[in-house]
Amino acid sequence: MSLMDFIKKQFIDVIEWTEAGDGTLALRYPMADNEIQYGGMLTVRESQAAVFVNEGKVADVFGAGLYKLTTQTLPVLTYLKNWDKLFQSPFKSDVYFFSLRQQLDRRWGTTQPVTIRDKDFGAVRLRAFGNYAWRIADPKAFYSAVSGTTARYTVDEIDGQLRALMVEKISDAVAGSGIAFLDLAANQVEFANRLQAAVAPDFARLGLALEAVTVQNLSLPEELQKVLDQKIGMGMVGGDMGKFMQYQTAQAIPKMAEGIGQGGGGIAGDAMGLGAGVALGQVMAQQLGQGLGVGNAAAAAAATLKPDEIMATIEKLGDLRAKGILTEEEFAAKKAELLKKLV
Image (cartoon, rainbow, N blue to C red; front, side, top):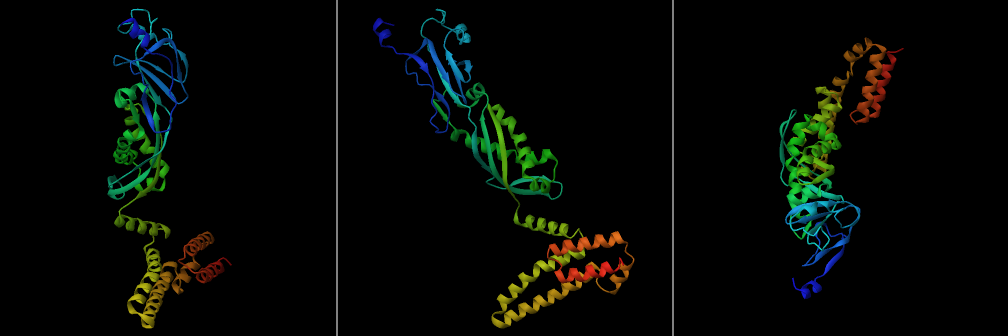
């Protein structure tokens, strides 16, 4: 190098990066053809890391702090090629800054239904979506596996890959848990924890830490949702088939009356709808009588009930009233009848 070239060469004595909030994850510090001044200052802010790369090799990684670049702060560089002046002269090295901040509210979701195996329903096709948060945990690994020598690497460039990892592991999360889908669907926090545990190792291989996962919705195909609704209805009446029929009838009355009223048209249609509603009401009343023991036979059976059984029956009747299966009048009449047995 001529004396004039040496005079013209610029030496960098302060190295720092002020994040612009533009989604940058990794940034190669702009060196042009400049060299770093021996004894120069390196500033690494909180939520940042700086990596020195010399001739393609990662030399040192710096966390938050203010560093004076000497052989004490860059000991690894003194053993690399061409350092024959004990590091006293300016040196050339690539410096990469990495943002360690959490990347919040990243969205994931299934574009197509995902098939899982469930002990209750067999094969189930479900859709799910939610959000997740992650950050760079190992800058050296992230540099080696993802960003490399790219001058600027952003969140958007890796976002699609991370979303695919989330969706890919849904089946593993459900299968590995051994928990029935209905139980997971009722506890979305548990489902999210299982999904995070399944995906976290894949993130770690990229130098990332998966900080949080939330599941905002789990949905089933319409036909399976109908089966689920029926199972819920059965649960409401304690699995009793007679009471389940009462529940089904109560659900059907307004729909059938509405349908007939629309089909018949005018006053005649309304009358037909009202007649159908009355007829269904009679059927329901009859089933209520059979299911709940209304009538002479039920009264005789009630006479043999013990006091604690009578109180338990009243509590069950109260639940049916709360669910709208029994009217207030029906509940009061049956309650009074049962209380007489305690006297």
